[in-house]
Amino acid sequence: MRDVPRILIVEAPYYAHIADELRAGAVAALDAAGATHDILQVPGAFEIPAAIAHAAGLFLPAGHLGAPRYDGYLALGCVIRGETTHYDYVCGESARGLQDLALNHGLAIGFGILTTENGDQAWARAARDKKNKGAEAAHAALAMIALRARFGAVR
Image (cartoon, rainbow, N blue to C red):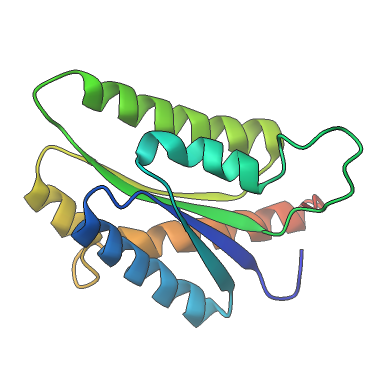
């Protein structure tokens, strides 16, 4: 790990005002911790795991000399239940994809994808003066980076 953690924030701005608030909370927490960050936007929460896998170099050919540029990742977005089962698939598969990356590849990932019933619930969780889930996800990623370092794993 570098002396200063470098984090990639992967956000799905489908609900832009929610994504903006999640990002603001995450960035404030990362800045306070002295971490640096880049931001990558993807169309929706479903695409976040694949974007992180690409950024981590998991699809590079064997023997590729490039080292991963990031110590950890933040997954930020919001899925609000609608009238169909689409919600269940997006929530479940984005969470599963991120957990697979963490368990199978040792990636430090902060999970900040809100899964809510309505916009009011989403705002209450995203707002920096309320639950501030963006900051919580940033803290989780930083904690997992530190845990990985504690056990001698480097990325």
